[in-house]
Image 1 (spheres, rainbow, N blue to C red):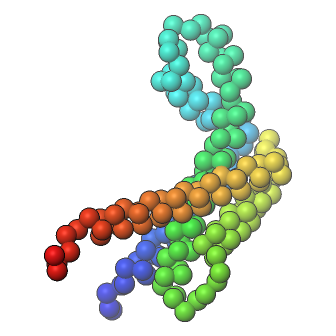
Image 2: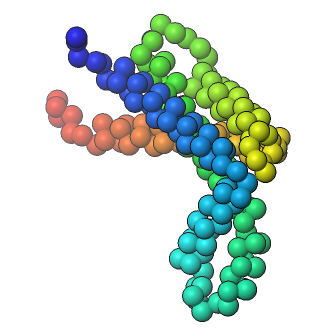
Image 3: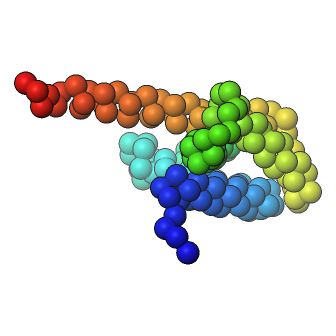
Length: 179
């Protein structure tokens, strides 16, 4: 068996990471409403204990009230974040696929294909939640998920642009051999 090329290795790595991350999202969605709320509440409490000055000195009632006020937004931020990661991973996968199959020409595929896959996965995920105890499928959450995926896609392109500029700058700053 021959050595695997760098583009093929990248494609395999990012495809596997994308599928694993989809599994993580599915696992979160498969938790019943009580377990899901308890898990996000516990994480929010830990974050607040680090981010809020004098958290430890606050009365238990004050802490609970703050958690109640922030919990819904925190959960929506979780949706956004997990799909931002998915959008980034799917963009990396599509990028590697297009490099691997250089004969394949799909205009702007690095944008629309991961966006479409993320949107379909988000819709399927919300549909799946309708069958989980105490959970529901929300069109609003599909929108939040899709916005997160688009953010992740944007991170890919912003990172690519930064890397490209660094490469150009390094190339320009190297002394020329003929000088």
